[in-house]
Image 1 (cartoon, one colour):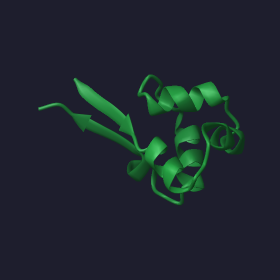
Image 2 (image 1 turned 30 degrees about the vertical axis):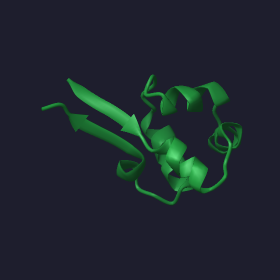
Image 3 (image 1 turned 90 degrees about the vertical axis):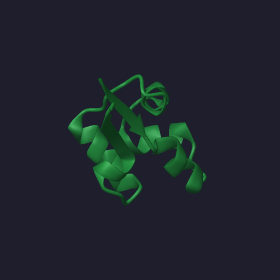
Image 4 (image 1 turned 30 degrees about the horizontal axis):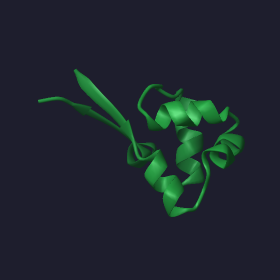
Length: 69
């Protein structure tokens, strides 16, 4: 089974950004950001790209998908 994780919380913290602020910028509800950070939600490609652009990173730097060994 593969594991999906994100660095959103870490990236937000490094910029002193609140969940609500990120949500507003990318056009989703704060609850969506919460679920993403907890690994409970897989974003659409558009949302993943929008979030990566906010942090000036690649999608792969924000979202990590690893196969369990």
